Length: 119
Image (cartoon, rainbow, N blue to C red; front, side, top):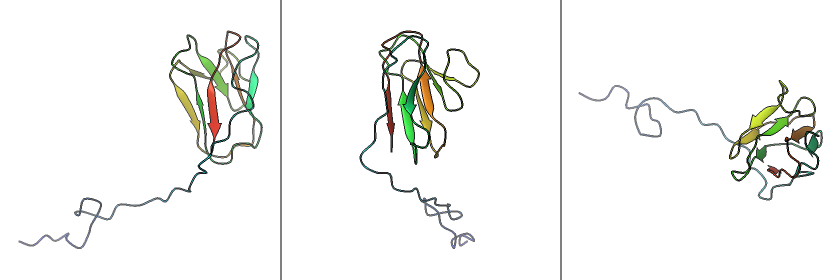
């Protein structure tokens, strides 16, 4: 018996056509943050100024750190604040759309370093 769905194809050659979403190309050179270290314990720093993220941004709390890094895209970051996102050592946070607000970060210890780039 011939396959009644032979006219439909997908990535595997069977079934219905898979939707394809084209992603916009990202620049090949990432742009770094304004700062990448917490200067004073419990005092937030501006990682990206308002309007600086036009495509994608990544913030990483490196695996070698011993405490959470708090990131906030709504208000100044604060340890334990409801809008601040805690990143455990080794965790990253991705902002995947343009935002008009500043991105801030804070940690409980001065000298806490992190990695942040925007594309």
